Image: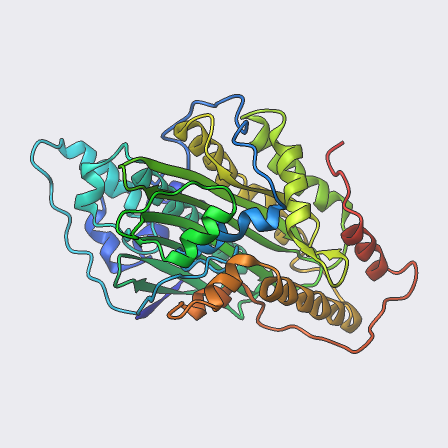
Length: 443
């Protein structure tokens, strides 16, 4: 079931040595070992160069993204349209007290316990299993997405000043599960959802077919294709029309073929959707993402910025959903570790790219006309997510999908008016011009 979290403490999770982490849930008190949580990425301080020279792939970004988002969909993560492929049912899961494994030093257990003590709920994978494979990418990614979820939720709660997150832990009978944290009708945020999921099992034939259609060679055994997928996904809709909406999603996928060969890749991105254009905000957001990308190669930001502009395109309106950010998929080179470090850098950029913008605008005055325009722009957000986001469609058209997770990205309120058109040279017309003709914000 869901449990409610109130009064998350001020300050980043990894600085908290008291209520902020300790009160998240009763389970975490068992791990009260010098409670100090790391920000994502601090275990791997090295920076890599020359990332992103991955496989050349054909087709449009939206076509290429189909199953990665949809399969990430297996994870039930809605915002970047993580629709679930197989049936997920809500069940209560007891995490159990972690046991120290023979031959494992206690300090390693304490380190894992310290990291876990700040999560919104226990890891999806049992701690005993995580301890047996500390260097496995599935372990590293699960811990990264849980840390990202907790840190973003805490930052949002601090800004909101009175929000209550409901923490909805679900389990998938076929393997794995997820944790959805949702805040509705807060002081600052109308709706904010941050979900993680970690799932595994056999890929459906439809999913494998879609993957092959975008260039992946997959060899099945008796028609079965074992997979693991995990990711963090979020959409945050503030109340004030001068505070922008953000979406982010980072995911990892692994497939084991019949001959034992494993294919893996990462995908993700982060994008901003303001109701009104604020040049300073746009520059800040894009510059922060560019700095994260530049740590790993100078070509990444321009490449992934363009991909983002191309993907979030509402074809029937001739508009982008927002002012973009970065977007990438099928990233599997130069090495697993280097791509992981790039994804870590991206997760570390979420809070500094966005929270200052919300703090800056959450108390701005606004008119009824500005609120109306926000609701109309939210309608466009809904149109993109339901009509074009292939992951959302993949989930919605698959029997047994977890619909609440898939639709978590939708705003609490939106509006459609017949033949609405803003007047020339208005603030409303200004943002439309940018959505029709994307700009370079960092040069």
